[in-house]
Length: 276
Ligand code: ATR
Image 1 (cartoon, rainbow, N blue to C red):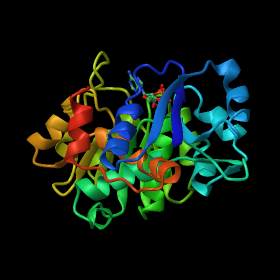
Image 2 (cartoon, rainbow, N blue to C red):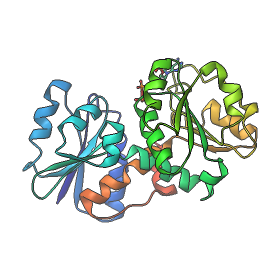
Image 3 (cartoon, rainbow, N blue to C red):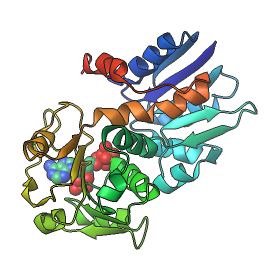
């Protein structure tokens, strides 16, 4: 029996067990996926104990993603660029490899939600709001997918500048006050901030300046239909919700631990939406 986990602190609200549990049942795999609460001061001991523990690996969530990056024996190039690890795989030799599947998860969700030629339709240009950990993964994903101009606007400009150093010539920092002008040149607008999340202020920006072919993506998924996405739909723009990134980021880990590449479909979405 193959075993995997999600580790975080706190961990009670993680939806990963529902996602992996659904796939285990769907594929008739006799495996398990456990929720494990580990405090920051015990995390390195937890990771060091993985070889020989019976776990094939697991997901890592807040606040351990940077620590997992530091503790993994090997890193995928993507994890290395992002500086954070959300997926650990224990190899047959006991070595632990770290990956970051948030970036391909976000891109796979866009690929599934928009027409396949969406990168061309953006004109290569995206505007990313926010500069935290999620923004970092998304910027790496967009650059890997071939976008050529990724502007990053953040409440705290220094963080946007730091993130823009990731891919010089492609990424550039932008001023929040300049958003109306920047939106006119953006084929894809992505909100990576917590604005619009239940219990948080909403993201008050006017989408009028976006071109008619633009798409709007939010990483917030509680609520599923954020005011930003409602405004985008109101303007007739393609709107991409935040739940898909959560679902798609789980795919590579499941495949590595349980040996089957699962699909993200309406049945899985329904299971998670019922729990939101
Ligand atoms: P995560 O790792 O999930 O991305 P984070 O690192 O805390 O979380 O980043 C949250 C993002 O939301 C940041 O870009 C943050 O802006 P700051 O860097 O200025 O803190 C943004 N954010 C949170 N609350 C905000 C608010 N009220 N107005 C504008 N941006 C906000």
